[in-house]
Length: 223
Ligand code: CDP
Ligand code: CDP
Image 1 (cartoon, protein in one colour):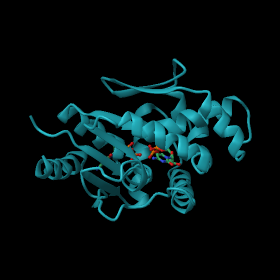
Image 2 (cartoon, protein in one colour):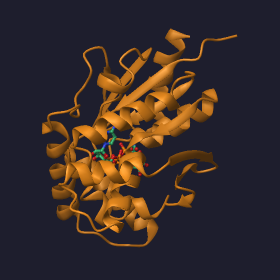
Image 3 (cartoon, rainbow, N blue to C red):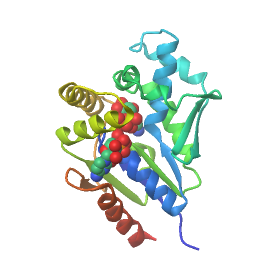
Image 4 (tube, helix red, strand yellow):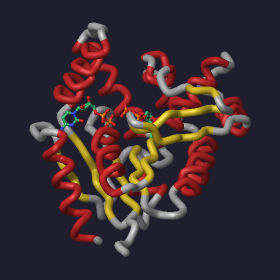
């Protein structure tokens, strides 16, 4: 039998992490773990509870009361919080534009790290996020850091929104992505950063298939 690897995929917003992670996980029958969805789920619940998102203890308190589940389905995964399906509602602009504040708190990150390591404990996982290669799975057999120009990433989100039926302002999207990148890269605990032993892939002018092919070549080398 072939080994089951742990694969870490990190990078900034809209670099293509979840799209390629899902394809690879399906291909190798690995578990896909979207750690961003966990931070989004917490942000959604904190907004609902009407607390100050800058209040670390209040946010950590919410986290201690929620059980977040990531369940695979045909489209990748559904996200449940205490049994409630939040898959769609955690993708709203309201959540997207505030999640980096919630993700900054050390108490939140410590707890998320424990939960994420538990989810990955048996190996055979593709986990995507910002700090997977650097903190969550420092011993992952394969670490990938995906990047792309901010213009390209904004355009990807714009096209995605158009497909869903709403028109967005491209410049505004670009600004929001740049703001989130800045908050994620400059926070003190586990910032968005390429792990020293990660392989960097610039996806700006690559297709999804092109990125998947490159990563699968690295996987095959390690199996
Ligand atoms: O899909 P997108 O790249 O827009 O974002 P995401 O992966 O859903 O992550 C949402 C936010 O969660 C990020 O902007 C980070 O603030 C936070 N996050 C994090 O801090 N650490 C992770 N491992 C994953 C996400
Ligand atoms: O997870 P992350 O935020 O890094 O990005 P994503 O949600 O997987 O991808 C953002 C969008 O870019 C999706 O609509 C993809 O179809 C598209 N895309 C891509 O992921 N990779 C490419 N090489 C080209 C386009």
